Length: 297
Image (cartoon, rainbow, N blue to C red; front, side):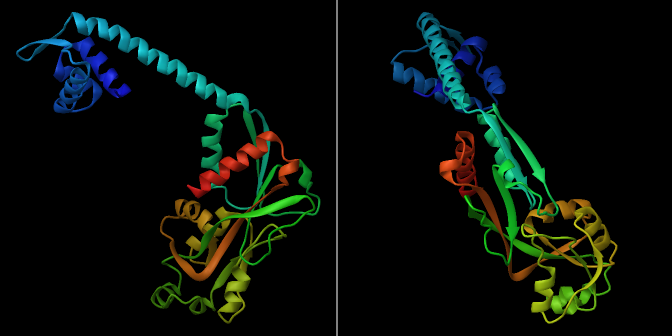
């Protein structure tokens, strides 16, 4: 016997009308009639007296409705108890990001619903410095296309996923037609590029390496770590640039007319850095397990 069937029965007992009940439940009348018929067959007793198209809850139905309502109430209590058990984990988590957090944010939102007593402190950096104190953080998220995973004493690093790298170009760019026809980055060798400013060990930009692998050194029109400024320059047709898959959605939201082309054989590896399991707090270990399952799913 399904709880859904009990719920349907209680609503029909309230309305005593198939059409009104089906509309209320947002299901078809035949589907509702089938559920009630299956329930009566299981109980081996009619629950309604039928007078043509009209229904009337009979004596057995009235008594059974009491039990059905109590059963659903007990199930709701059990659900509340089970959910409350998930709330036993509490504490603060510090998450520092050197790469777009488009994947991380939905995971944090989902985790917070299950564990409302866990409070997150999120930090987004566009560059890294030698003055950063790693001990203040529980997790570090960064991306790299050409660097080995960060190692720092008792910290551990694991690769979470890979994301593609795209060439962004405006249809008004003077080399747009040639590039779209060939798809070869070398056709952009005379173009200006947007290059990063003050990147560090945790920040990775593929511009220089990609261009050199295509046989030229990029000419920089602007050095910036500001995504909005970068996209605006590209949208004006003044330059081209590379963005990771995590930044692509934001870039196209800023300038929908831009076109993106994946760069063959290039991708960013996104890494998660965390303290060794023997040094992690209970809440950090729990979130790490949840994050791993979330990404794998």
